[in-house]
Image (tube, rainbow, N blue to C red; front, side, top):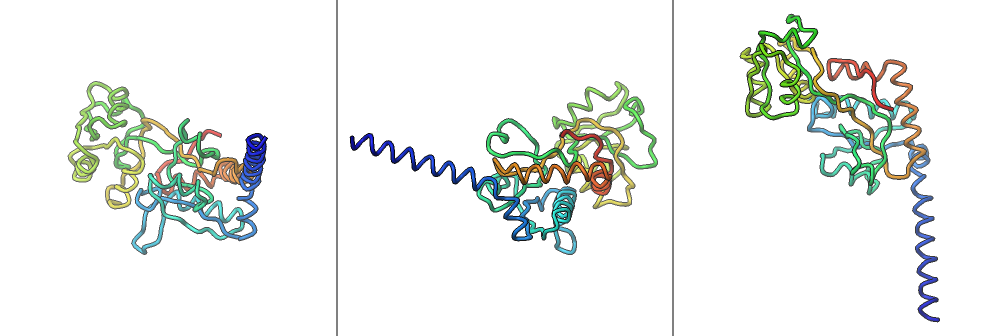
Length: 263
């Protein structure tokens, strides 16, 4: 009888905890609106998505997106700097209400957090000076292109470039960027973050986005079960896509419109 009673009490306690957890899991939006403040985790070491500017203030596409969401909610934004390693734990432990930090969506992450619709592109592409006419992969024929050996962009470029393209492979991103900046190559194939940083540091190059190699959009992370907050952010992002605000942010920081992003 005592064992049965203990099992019954344990079941009731677990049920109460589960109910409490479920109730708590839907309070994020209410809490944000009540406090008139939202904590958003952003990168500060990954330009052009998030970095510290010369004024020592966070800036970048993810930072601007965080501010856009705060503005649409009518609340103050508290930016929470995170790394790739701690951004999801910060969300799980309520140190952040949202994570806007070049977060890709996959099955492993879906098991522990939820995601909004995509808010920005993350891509590998070919970049070159505005003065160089390149509108298709066929136009790469006879031109020199720098790329980091073995990187995703190397793999994609190998598939898409014509046989007569002069693909020069370097051992790391720094070497690839240096070759382009110094004029050793006419074009560079690299990720958006590397290109954005390169263009910000070397405006005299007049470099711009030319050709897409591979697209991997970013999503906003939300704590598991926080459907009210997730749906509200979805509403804001969808409206910003329709108004052109999302495209404007992508153009500002990535040199190309966001284009069609998955819902």
